[in-house]
Length: 210
Image (cartoon, rainbow, N blue to C red; front, side, top):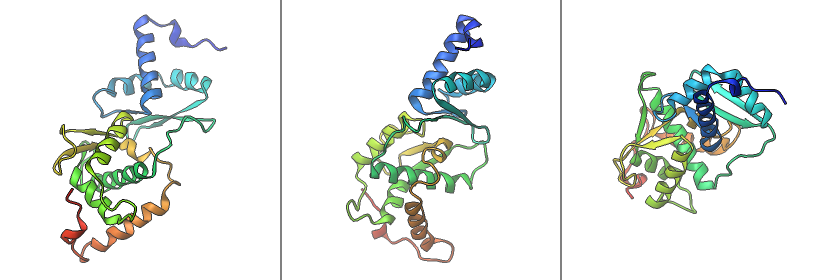
């Protein structure tokens, strides 16, 4: 087995390497703009060749998107992926849509922040027969899940409040492969297109006030 250069370095370097590698394995994404992963992002970028070699031995490919400031892992064997429930996939896709919409309005240095009510509005537009309304518990549990994987962070403590602020990280763009949920993505956009410039306004009954 090849001897990794990092193991010849100081104990401090070894600990930094171990901490950054574990963050990737446990949390999926390392975000440049996220306070508690920024140092890990910088360390990985400074030692890319070491991390690429290390994760290659484990059967992973290190994915780096410098434009978005996101580092992630892909299992080369196609295993190790989190299988989302349908409702989790829907909320994740809604978060992605909101991120894309908000990102267009902001400078590159500004964070993407949405309100809980905006998530409810997007969900309500889908009119999913099996679950017409997105209840507070379901939303709270899903946001907790995505927070664990460095996709979102709640700015306000109680995310069930309509005005609670949720920060969405660029990792949301990479959390679902582009070829997944395409039909649902198009369905959401088709519904939203009814309210584009010059179109219909959103009636009160179309907005989930829960």
